Image (cartoon, rainbow, N blue to C red; front, side, top):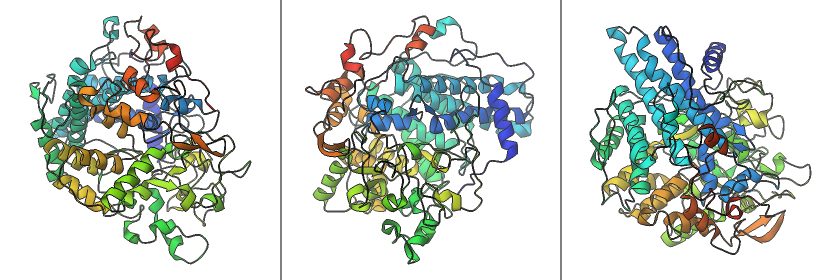
Length: 636
């Protein structure tokens, strides 16, 4: 398990170079030119590199305008695996889930953050050779350059998956003509894939080993994810195992240009499988902090509480044991967190809780009655939180149906979801709860112990080496579980989907204890949904699987979303309510909104204005769509 205590030296360096690199205070595309003498030594480039990565901490831990900045959380709420939920006042989460908005700039924060990351990567690429690298330092130089290309591609991919056609910025010298939005299909994705190819060819073929940095295998894995989205969503490839699509790359350092086809992507994944040294953890539960050894010990000591769900695990497979949890054997890339949160960090791209995995707080249980929130006797071993984005009935019901048809029990279902009625018999709903499904999030859920001093203490406070966060609030500050951006299980499932060879998928199935099947697209779709439930991949998978029906109400995505209509939910602490779309309760609400928007969020109006209207509002959010269809209204 990685260390989560940040040294004073690292804090100082990160603070210094975050401050000096806050280049986008008012315009998220314009940068200040760096001095010709900076960076002057390799350590300067390392610091610029740290600043490029640090954007991910704000994405992972930032809370702007009442919603977590993490785009994978947003995509979870936009999928059929989550409801908006929360309390009556939690309008942003509910409006996101219903494909509506309560304000013109409601979804602006990630737009700014992602362009900020792109700006930092561009600066790193352009200035890296200000350093007089020696021949002996060439590998270090190429690694840092490869990381910058990779991170630029990653931030650009997330940006366009959220907002669609946007300006493509590949330079620090931004003139007004660059404000023009570009076609994601024809211009931006060729650049994204070229950046991943550059990263793949420049970075070392050595695993980063949980350092939080990218390596060659990271770039190869994301090359596949980006290609598969482009081929499915834009080129409408229905089944990648039997169809192909090729894309013309951009010539730049590390990428010779030419054409990228499916065979090249398969070769990249095969390199990860054959040479990356990754392997699946033996037990799926090892990936998640509820399997920590301190909780396991309580399950076996015969005292107090006992969390029976992990009692049959091998202790060596617990989350905090070598090779498990943070830095585990299947973790390819992740956002890392540490004990450095403060209420006032400062800086354009910083947030008070950016070093805490705030997803644990947003997905925490809202259990309580009046002032009884977070009482350990009601929720052990799970802690209190905001209860936004609770798992949908659809996820549980579809999973249960698959188990019934197949005649098996999938460890991942209860390894992912808290069945409140059966696992937490004393659980009570808050009087202002909305869209409660009866299920909670177990992945990323913060965990309590009998050994903890207070009801809302985190188990991390009892972990070796712990020191109190300067945020001085365990319920909000003590969340240090890595957020997975790429796991080896994803590489295996992508390989089967691209080739039709089930042997890779079978490894994932075997780990879950479910029957190993032959290839079918449906089998891959199910495995991806069960394996990565609530990790933010489902929504973009649905979009790319929609193929030739991609932009209609008959698409895979639209029909899956619409299936939420009519599900039984709890609202205002009362059972018997039904799930319905907030703007079109009598019509095909989710299906219609998906078809209208193609799954894109509205571009922030303030940024459209800033760009002199050279960037246009997305369909489904513009003047051609009645505001009654996209404007949030209180439903409960």
